[in-house]
Image (cartoon, rainbow, N blue to C red; front, side, top):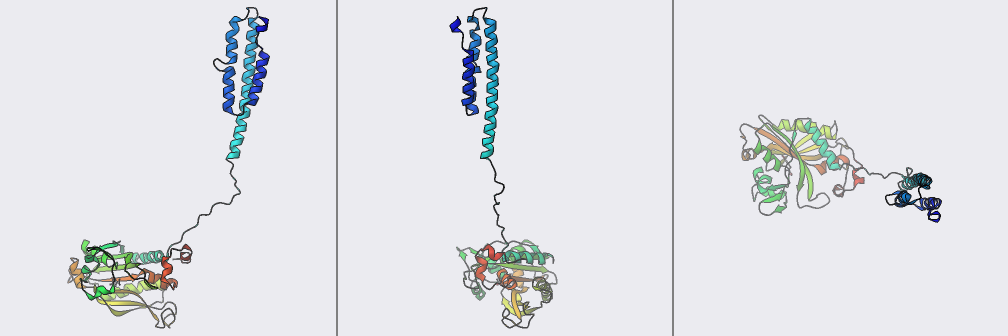
Length: 343
Ligand code: DAH
């Protein structure tokens, strides 16, 4: 019996060594199962109590209980140590260097075209114009025919065109939007229509894609004086309070009479300089009274209503206003270029 008595002190030593050796919570848990889990060494010792001589049982039972308590203590201490070691390792792993410089997000800038469009929209919205956004793919009818420019009309030569098959084309002018608006509603009409237009031209002053701003006013009793008054207001707001406007006769198939609108040079005040090529005037847009034929094409009675229209090139206005000397700069997409301009 005597030599069969298990070596409880030896087991305790074993546990001490094993808990010290376990280097992760997981391996510690496995060791614990071996001693304290179901079928582990200590529960087995308890079970063997019945084989111990009855007079030895109380002392043996007490000793095994003592061992179990000691084992619990050893495991709890080892677990606490490991947990704090693992937390420490996690802190190290997830350490953030707050002294690192942050990543800079570069700010964009509005393109000069956008600045001009926004400015014009706000000037004209202040005069009661609504915005109408037309479509870039148009039919021949809306871009030309309804605007009093039927096939073989010589004015078609003024605007080379990208055709998309027999029926469709890329609009050459925002004027196409006028027709949609007048077809869809009766006067009073007062719209402003900014957008991209396309023509197969590509040189220092032309790009195959550019932007225009169209305006259209139709109502009873609208005259050329209304157009002139509105243009004066527009020129003062966009180019400066001292700027004057003048109308020169011109020709567009969709207006009659047609005019070319100049503003007095805002660079030299009209004395003559490089910008105005010594003339004191700068051409900024085309305009006129809506041709009776166009009103009729759109279902508006030209005996009851009259109107004026105007159209301008956004890039041209941007180049004039910001002193940009090469149109290509507007199409390179260089943000450093755009950053130079403010509304
Ligand atoms: N659509 C013309 C062009 O692209 C510009 C224009 C001139 C528009 C006179 C108008 C206008 O509305 O009345 O050259």
